Length: 323
Ligand code: ACO
Image 1 (cartoon, rainbow, N blue to C red):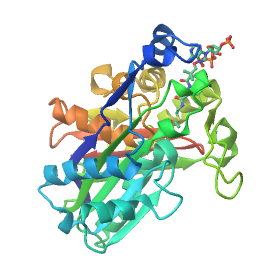
Image 2 (image 1 turned 135 degrees about the vertical axis):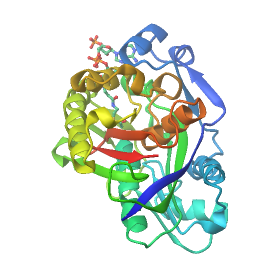
Image 3 (image 1 turned 30 degrees about the horizontal axis):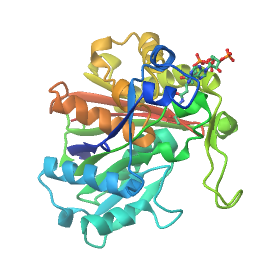
């Protein structure tokens, strides 16, 4: 069988760091409250003249170098983003131009914080069926652009960044020892739109809008539903939870990550967290966390990795692969 294998990983964070203390200067909050409720210590923020595509390009370059590939090799670009440069064209086509990739397939996927897991499943469809040989799957976000900076219940939670995977076909035996993507579980429940959304858009207000969230209700849904998706994903991949070496969750909140871990009885040491440094970077958070854990020597080639996320929609899902 042909598997879609992750052959390169890269990420990029904008230079500017905003600490909790920085936020406390203009909104009624404190470093203690933010750390205790979320685990977040700081977030990165893009420059005014630095669009989402620029973050995506930096991450993509590093992922391509990691895979030993060049922009000329790329035949599919999928950008998972909820903060595109423009309403159209797709940020993926802007990335294609900036990287200098040949004419190929390029489009965006919009599933908010679950976007990277959704995008990876789409790339798998192309790669495993022979329609792409070198795919760039990028999560790139500037969530700080969607903040209402007077709303302390949301503005402390988010940050900017980008991460990318290179996905290439690899021959496998059809077993769980194969390198590559082994299984997915994707979910959406549109009846929960009101819990997490942006109050603007081209066909409604004509404006970009601000992020709105009923945080404690999102929290309640997250733990139960993510745990279910992880279990379903393992079943689809024909693996046991005990086969997973590393869990790389979407980095929204330390308490959600811990809640899911407790529910499934995961060993804390196997769960990668970067939420303290990155805050919630939506679709970028999983590849950012993955890259950090590869760079610090924890995740190694051959390890079994499980990604999971939940976001606006609500959407959620999980994906298992051997690196
Ligand atoms: N600083 C100080 N106080 C605050 C802040 C803040 N930044 N934000 C809220 N508070 C106050 C509230 O006003 C409230 O005060 P009150 O009791 O006087 O009314 C009090 O803190 C408690 O508020 P809750 O909302 O009940 O606090 P909770 O413990 O639920 O924590 C939080 C809020 C952190 C948002 C939590 O609900 C959460 O993490 N939810 C998950 C949301 C999330 O991570 N979403 C992202 C996933 S999807 C995606 O990534 C797009």
